[in-house]
Amino acid sequence: MLLMNTHATRRTYDAGLRSLLSLDEAHAARLRLAGWSGLSAQATPAWSMPGLARALGIAQLTIKDESRRSVLGSFKALGAPNALIKLVQRRFAQAGWSAVELLAGRCAQDLAQLVVISATDGNHGRALAAAAQSLGCRCVIVLHAQVSDEREQAIAAFGAEIVRIRGSYDDSVHEAARLAQERGWEVVSDTSYEGYEDVPRDVMQGYGVIADELLTEQGSEGSCPWTHVLLQGGVGGLAAGIVGCFWDRFGAARPHFIVVEPEQADCLLQSAIAGRPARAGGSVDSVMAGLACGEASPLAWRFLQPAVDAFMTVSDTQAEAAMRCLADGSQGDVPLVAGESGVAGLAALQSLAASNAERCAVGLDAQSRVLLISTEGATAPGVYAGIVGRSDTAVRAAQQAWLTTWSR
Image (cartoon, rainbow, N blue to C red; front, side, top):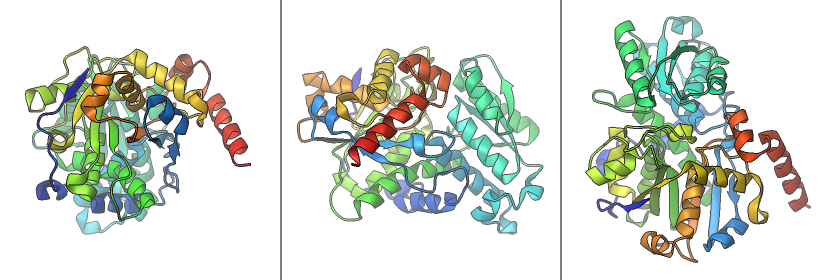
């Protein structure tokens, strides 16, 4: 389903929004996280996919590959760690600890009694657990019924204590908030709610690192290198982080933004219909586990409502096909390991390209230059192999063979 957003405008970036999220803040987050052993020292690659671009009838396709971000395998390695550092620095302001000291574990003795908690579908909780382990504080992660044992084990491997509940992701968010209130713990969530915006803002600033890398590589002058940017939905944090930075940089000349969600977890599309943060209209459960969210983040919505041109949904079947497309190196492009949520943008682009009416509606044509963000690799290797038909290791071997061939 494609829904054009009647509230979308083209204007200079709002000062109030810039005070919350800007390219400067994204760059500061990049510097804050630099040197952490949990992250790659290099920016993640932005792959050119000329074969797929031709097949889709567009001029250019770029895929930013967040599977290379860290051993955690997803963009979430930027959000929770940035937010945790800033939370600790606020709570222990008089100590004057730097990010370098915190991430190196030099303050662990002083942080031993600090407990952080969050709900997760997998990747956010894993990133928070890894950051908490580095800082030396306790971490509790609340998992809902649909989170696989494989994802639970990946989180627990970083020393997190696991709380299992029945129900959905949104139920786990409420349970994390309840436990924190009851026990005096600190919530580190990418979802905002009434009276809770500082940490989700810091999470979004962390996600802005992706935009900072992309725009730094393109230089500081000139128009936007991309005409269209397709972004995963979820609660809206990633999309808001990228939208805010691009809007800050290009103002009224920003690219067209399209936000993509699973058919059954369309809280942002429903928010666009309602004109305010709303709940999803479906069951929420999806193979795109990281996007299986039922309630939009009110903070993220403040960025998305005025700047996202269209909201759309894709099916689990379409996402699975997109995973195989990238793993196969379709159309002669480099093979990529992209997980279930990571391919939402490609699934949407393929759907748009197949419909003349939808192409026209979003202004997609032979001159379009499209940016996608593959937000995760095989964060659940068993699930990945079951969908793609071979392991992520095998796909990476194919990628290396492709790179070796084309470097000659």
